[in-house]
Image (cartoon, rainbow, N blue to C red; front, side):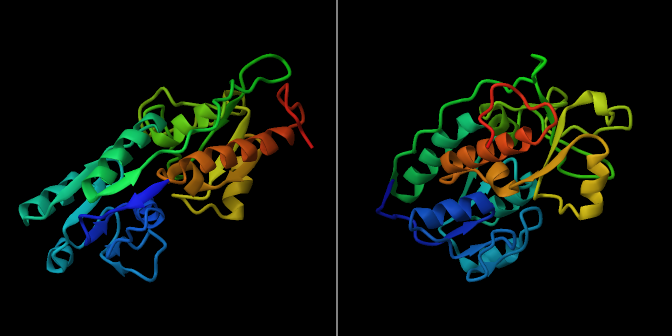
Length: 252
């Protein structure tokens, strides 16, 4: 729930999650990135290459960035241009409420976070072992998400053990990692990589492969509570299609 009493009226968003959240708060930015899925707003480049000169010409009251999403050199360039920048840092579920509360206070929105769905216990195979999921976010080389990322923390909340998550934020994998005995299922997010059917067929040679919503997995903000519920439901459906589904699961 939010009550809009905006003090700042001209905001530029460099983060799709922020653009969506501002809209939910009734505080649409005046410009955003081309990845924000807002064709009605002016675009000022991408998350990794914003047009600093164009932003400066707009004379915004505030630019909102994120340390995980945007580059420090762009932040520094905006600050050097005399622009106020609010740099959020959301690397896990626990960061969402305090960082959004800070942003809401900065722009004059009274916001109360919705409670998260209950945390799930880890999925277990019928054999009793923990079910491990490979979550590819890129190929050539394959990359995945580590425990220090929002996406991995969301999946952990849903009871999913993400393979290789102990190797840093965005581990790069080699051929030895991609063997069928290293994980039980592949959960392929719809972004940031656009998986074609041939790519999914390739992944299916490693383990049963299912596509999940990348925005629900990686876009934090006001969508987070509902996104957790959707990711948990999608993961449960995927696991129910395994030959030996984890127990206990309420499969249709």
